[in-house]
Length: 231
Length: 172
Image 1 (tube, chains in turn brown, cyan):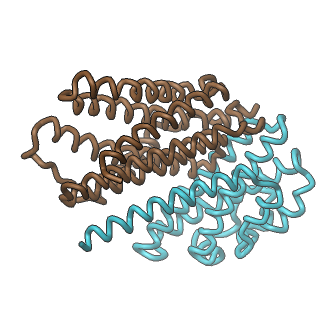
Image 2 (cartoon, helix red, strand yellow):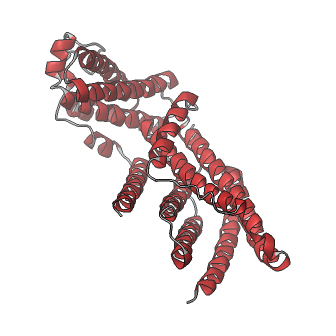
Image 3 (cartoon, helix red, strand yellow):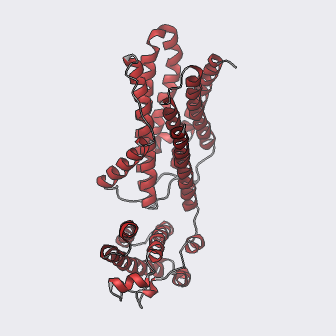
């Protein structure tokens, strides 16, 4: 299979999985318990529908569209992680965490993840491509750092997780770790097809997360696991 | 090439940590009294520090003496792990009985957090300076809070899960 054909398959697979997940989320009434995650699914369906239109109508502006898409996507990821944190608090009937604790954990996580790489900024690239590289690296670091903060904080308090929230966090976990890995490998100056295959690995992890969520949302949440306070 | 290898190893480490964390959360969601009691570490007991352990807060020893009786880091680590299990036991009791005292529950949560922070500080200090004055003071503070938490836990179990009290007393 050629790289172009694989890209097409990925785009279609993403659109089909995203739409299926959206339908399942409506069926499961996820908009009531996890409104931000549901809004993200709406966004995914809309951006998947807009992508072929942008390619057809204004192919030269595709990179700008992609950057905007990627930024909104990642902002949604952070909002969803915050929503999962609130769902865990509600489920455990616990008080919100101290801001200082969260800042400390987040700083530790960022330092840990940042220190993993020899992050380079290819200043010779055109501005738009430089922005792409910076966003790719920055979001990859922050995504894993936020996830680690959530995991440390919930471990510290020995919190239980509602099944649905844990499923969503697991999907994000796979995507976050793989995207950090590919961002790190990109800093080793891979070019041409190597560069392309690395991006494909990241796309595959995203499709994997979507598939996992489709399977998870296909099963009804147990009554005891629904995201409501326990008293 | 070495850097690349190290990066892959560390990312694999992060992935393994997240997998273990997920397994821990799933286990926590499916716990029972038996599984919780089985996780209490019996290799060291705070009875060495107080005659009225499990019934009354307080340590009947000086910081120096307490450090010897808790066998150094071994006792500290047991307290760290048991504090977490007791916290999960309190949450479990709360889920299965609507009448658990909120204040008692919050106190137990706070106890668990403080004990664990204190133990980690003591262990970190111990790593640098062995059994210095600061280590012994932190260990003593952790032990005092631990006896208080254990007494409150016994009280909670007596009121809301009396059938597990004998097993809890035996395990602690």
